[in-house]
Image (cartoon, rainbow, N blue to C red):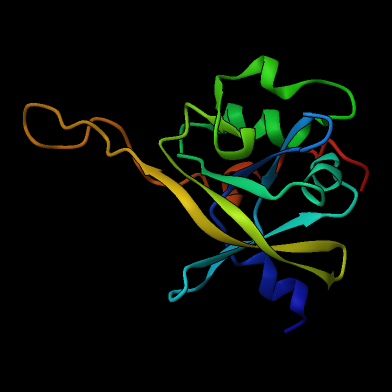
Length: 172
């Protein structure tokens, strides 16, 4: 089976990664599907950003990135950060956010998120750069329960199969 056929059957949770340039204060964020916890002790997380993405240009200068888990009902947020580019709009004018560690934007509508210090950049990953993060601040706000003890909102993640038809905001 060719690799493309193998990759086509995989489904990944979709994340939004945000960054801020420490010198200019310019904010950026993008939709990401290539990411994974890569160590337990010490805790490490790998997130990969396309080298043609506006967020990549900000992230290479940023000492801290924030990673936000999208829930199944947040396709609109995925579209904002996946189909738009910071080269043309300020995405943060179109969503709710607050400054986090090192002023990195934290999306307030994402209840599961963390900020992490960039401990290594891996430039040899083809058309992506890998950012290895040491988590420093994490939020995992549980869904409120209803009177019958069942979570009132679906916590299942937004998956790649849910956004497959989005068109990247950056050049291919």
